[in-house]
Image 1 (cartoon, rainbow, N blue to C red):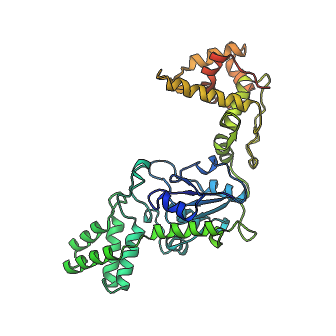
Image 2: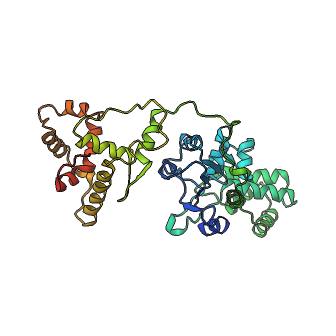
Image 3: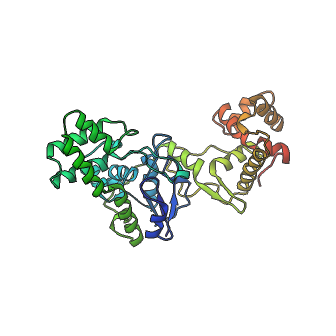
Length: 371
């Protein structure tokens, strides 16, 4: 059983491997990332960090699909805590201070865990402080007698009013002081105390989650009969899976969507349209199909052309070039639209977007016909 973790600014990959030596570390999770993994029932996906500002965030249905396939899914700290609190009734597990705050309803804003950070080359270095950490610091300072309850509340309110891209504890304290919520001495004492008693709730929660994953503990237990099951999935989920779920061959990796494209474009007979209203199959439809090798070879050829510096991109191929090549191949110059529909494409746009990926390979190697 394999443990996968999605990490970024909250915890380093080195610390994660110190807790789970054979963990597979991924960058912060994005939409479709989990569906690209080659997972088996019993594997664990631990979600800590995720992207949402730069790209689409991981969708709930992606995680629900994994749960229904027997994959253990758990979260903490950041995006993981958010999704775990939202999907707890369906079997996603959560652990830690941040998860408890969301699950109990004490906090409910996504920006509680948001930070501005660098990219992978910078080690996902954080440039701002998450509101949840500022909240914890002010609350603990109140408990230690450094701040009154009213002063702690004022610091949190000023931090919450700041955009997450500018949020820092020092700035929140300064704004609170300027607004009259903290005296000068109290503001200085609080900042000194916070520096001496630094506590990163998100990082601590990530360590807890990984420790549970290493021990196969309660917080990463599998979905059971007490958890809800999704009653069917929308067609969009099937489309996500067909475009991302890996099919491995001896020469590389492809997907159902790419193999289906080969069959529709070059197959001797039209490929019937799949049932996109039914629950997606647990494994790729075309796993082991001979056309998978053609899909892999075509993708590799596109990469080779791009490396040659010829400024080649499949998306640059003109519609007329695509239409002319396949019109000749199919002997359908007089009614290309009818042939496109007969072969199961949704419309001309669907046909052209797929055909562009295979046109260069077909021209160079002859139009391939799958067995």
